[in-house]
Image 1 (tube, rainbow, N blue to C red):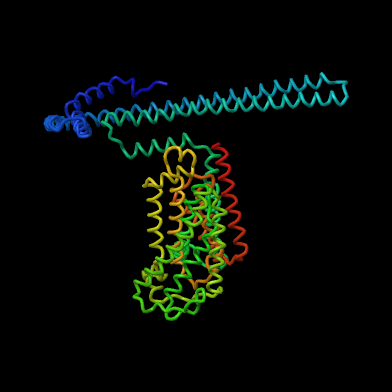
Image 2: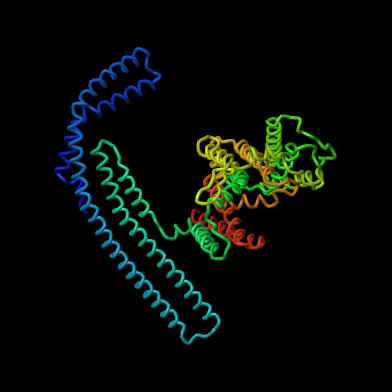
Length: 558
C-alpha cells in the first residue's frame, strides 16, 4: 500500500522548507535550553566553565528568538498549507488502508475456511482408514488398539484446528495493525509539520482507532459483563418502581440518601482494599466498627452514660469542651483500631500467617471484649448538637418540587477517597503496595521491605476503620453488635470494583464504585419492598460472579 504522505513531493518540499525556517530559530532555542540544563546537571564542570556555557547559550537564545520572530508568520502560513495538504492526502491514504484491510481479511477468512475443511477431510479419511483396518477383528485387544488410535487422531485433529485458528488470528492481527499504523502515520506526520504540536481531534481519533484495534468482544464482556448486568438491574428498578406504586426511585433525595449510606461504609472498603491488594483480607472490620462506635457513643453521650465498661463508670464527659470530646472520641477510635489492626498485621507480616486467620482471631478478641465489657447493652445516642454538627444535613431548599438536604457525611468520605487515591498512586509506599501484592518475593529481592509495607497497610486500614467507626456512631445507637457483617460488604465491594484477590491489581476508584453499587443495590431492593433475606441472595450472586470473572482473567494472564 502506497504511503502518500511520505511519497508526495510537494509535502517533502513543505517539510524541508519548514525545517530550514526553524533551524536557526525555534529549533536552536530548544537546543540551547538543553545545553543549559545539561551544564547545570554536570557536577564535573567548574563553576566558571558552567557560567560561561550558560552565558553563551543565553546569548544564543536571544539571537535565535529574533530569528524565530522574523520567521513566525512564514512558518505559520507554510505550516497551515502543509497540514491541509497532508489531511487531503490522508483521506486517500486511510481509505486505501481500510479497503486493503477488508480485502485481506476476506482473503484470510476464505483461506482459513479452506484449511479447516481440508484438515477435517484429512482426519476423516484417517479415521475411516483406521476403522477399516480393524474390520473383522472383534477381540478386546483389537478394540482397545482401535480406540487408542482413534483417540490419537482426535487429539491430532484438535491440535491442527488450534494451530490453524492461531495462525488465522495472528494473520488477522497483522492486517489490522497495518490499518492502525496508517492512522498513527497520519497523526505523526501532522505533528512533525507542526514541530511536535498535537491537536485534540487527532488524539481522539488515534485513541478511538487504538481502542477498535485492541477491542475483542470476549475480553470486553469479561471485563464489563458484571457492570452491564448491574446497570440493567438498576434500569429495571427505575422502571418498575413507579409502575409498582413505590414512587420515582431516581430522585435527588434518593440519590443523596444512597451516597450518605455509602459514605461511612466507604471507609471500611478503603481500609480492606489495601489488604486485598496484597492477596489478603480482613474479617475484623465489623468488630472494629463496633469498638470505635461504642467508644464514640460513650464519650459523646449527653449526660451520664447508661452503661458501664468493664464494670467501670458510668462516666459523664459533658464537662469536657465539645471540641475536646470530639477529638477524644475520634482519637481513641483511631488508636484502638490501629492497635488491633497492627496486632493482626504482626502475625501476618512476621510469621506469614494468612490475614484470614490473623484478622479472624482479632475479630473474636474484640467481640469478646466488647460483649464482656458492655454486657451487650447499647451505649445510647450521642449529643444531638454534635450529631447535627457532624452527621446532619445542610438544607438546600426546594429543587423540582422536592425539599433537598445535603448529607454532611459525604464530605469526609470524599476527603478519605482523595487521601487513599493519593497514597496508592502518588507515593512510594503505594507503589510498594502493588509490588508486594504482585510478587512479594520479587519485591523483597528488589530492596522493598515486605514487613514494613505489610504493617503499613494494616496500620492504614486501622486508621480508615477508626474514622469510619467514629462516624458510624452518628447513624444509630452503638452496641457490641454494631457493624455485624460489614466486613463482608466491604470485601464484596472491593472485589466487585475490580480489586483482585490474586494480588497486585486494583484501583481506589474500583473500591468506591463497588461501595456505591452495593449500597445502591440494597437501597433499590428495599425501596421496592424486597424481603431483606432475599437481598442477601442478590449480593451473593453478584459476589460469586465477580470472583469467578476475576479468576477467569487471572487464568488468562497465566
